[in-house]
Image (cartoon, rainbow, N blue to C red; front, top):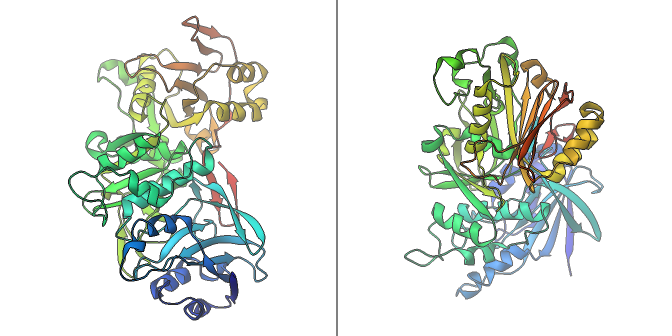
Amino acid sequence: MVATRKIIIHQLSDYNKLLERVPTSHIDVAIIEELKSVYGQACKAVVVEYPYYETDYLSTYYIFYAKKLKPFSKECYRLLFFSDTRCYNLIGYMSLRPTYPGTHLGRTYLEPEPVISNPAYLLLAESKVHFMGGEAVLNIFPHMKQEGDVAVCAHVSLWSVMRSFTYRFHEYPEVRLGQLVEQVKPKDERMIPSKGLSISQMCDVLLALNYSPLIISNSSFQDCSDAILTYIDSGIPVIGISSAASHAVTIVGHGEHETGNLIKGLVPSSWFEPYLSNSDLTQDLPKVILSTKLINSFYVNDDNFLPYRVVCRVPYASQTYFSSNGTQKNFRLQDFDYAIVPLYQRIQLGYQEAKAAFMALVQMGTYSWLDRIVMRMFISSANTYKEYVYENRQYFGKKLTDIITGLEMPRFIWCIEVSKPEDFVDKMVSAIAIIDSTSSTINADPFLLITEKEQIKLLNNREQKAYQLPVSFSRVPNFNKNLTEVNVNGKNFI
């Protein structure tokens, strides 16, 4: 029979009562301390549930723990967190595994509002939770801690990315942690106990499970931060890898755009995107600022901590947190020298190719761009983008709305929004370019549609012709459907 016990949180010391309800075979003092630090008094009640059968732990139990001389239990504890003392409003839960000390933190689904202190844009998915005869829906990014022998940080990052896709796209089935471990192809030696995964092994797992992984690195992009942020803005979680620390984390969102210097005109010259040539023709062309340059923080799920931790960009490059295994760690964005992006299989053009195509378009000088523009790039599904256009039809106008919603597109498209600096602050867009994500990388003109103030360029794929149509275009709200805007006082989709 499932037993539940409720603990009311009047003060931080009340979290210590968990040690009376949960045996040390399932919990560490460090977990209690981190709950105090992260949740504080935003959590008003904790319900302890036992037994709880976590499917991801069971999937590793049968391939590893069941084979040991020392007996390991199959039963977990589950902690349910509520923002009210009557336990009506569920804000998260975590399972506690009967594994070795320091590895007890199992599947952890926490809503971010009680956890973060500043507005953020996160990649969240809805997950149904059944508890005490009821049901709730949490908006979360999946998280857990590595248990050390079967699964390490690379396995956990892969698991969290795949579980996120499962909750958002029906064609991606649920892959349990043990099943993922068994997908890894050994190189020279046994895979359990695990000594970690190489980048190629991680990509092999993604390929085997119908993803199309793309590897980006600081060596090829100078600084891969802009590429990472662009894919995050596309609603795609990214696995960040630090070679020096032999560690992998999942990047799940970013902070606000810091636009103060943009409005004041105090933009460093290094922020302007370079043109493809240094000829004199570029002197009168607009200065293009990538919107990701205005973002100074990432949100990551690191298996050493509870989710939604901040990673800062230069100049303030590090923050220290207390991890669930009792250690102190510093986060630095520069530590991520590689990243793995799990793309949809039919997407051919990556970040670099799409950006280069737009910069070549600007360099042609045939479009009346402004003296200084902010360029925002992202991937969207065609259906989601058409939905956005239709919802904002009062801004697009009937004719352009009909053109875009009737435009033949692949399943996913690259979108580029062009804004004047003052419009970007107001989340408004002055021009739009849509790129065929299935186009060849050597195609010099992958655009499906380009807008200007008084006309648009429309490519008819069946006739292989481009049309200039006299359709007016002024300002429209920016696209707002890939990430969730999370504030302390609530959330809205963005």
